[in-house]
Length: 227
Image 1 (tube, rainbow, N blue to C red):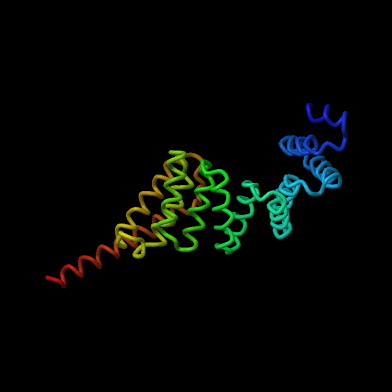
Image 2 (image 1 turned 45 degrees about the vertical axis):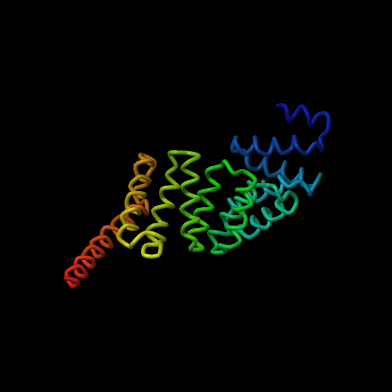
């Protein structure tokens, strides 16, 4: 209502148009939101938030991911301090396998909003993808320091110890596997009823059970041979 009152004074007032786009989306009135968004972009195509909103719209549409990423990139060009746009673009870059570029955007977002737990989870994912194990653990732990119950961080830690087993500084393979089990179990406990029946963590735990048994048998053989 406030936005509509502002538009009665100036129908080209972009902040009010942005507010209407967001309100319309929340109400499920997507066609109206899209129409207002296009109107706003015709008024001023150099407003970063408009490109971000367009990116969100395109990302939700099949086959429009490249265009969505271009919209996020444009938003960042117009406002380099746009942490939300950097997060959105970083997530897509990470999913697409461009790990260094994703990491760069998450690092920039961290500098801009260092107290947002989700940024540190994404940072952990990117560091894990680039095999920077210690940095990945530090990022996940930072996320948990900011928000003690954060299933995503425990899931990331589980994947970290599983992936880095044998290479993680200061941990042997068996210890890394055991840490992975603890993290996945914590993740499942915190998810509770939100946990999907086919959640990937269950398969990881089954795999880890086999890996731990093999690692223990190998250690026993090595110890037996040593004696």
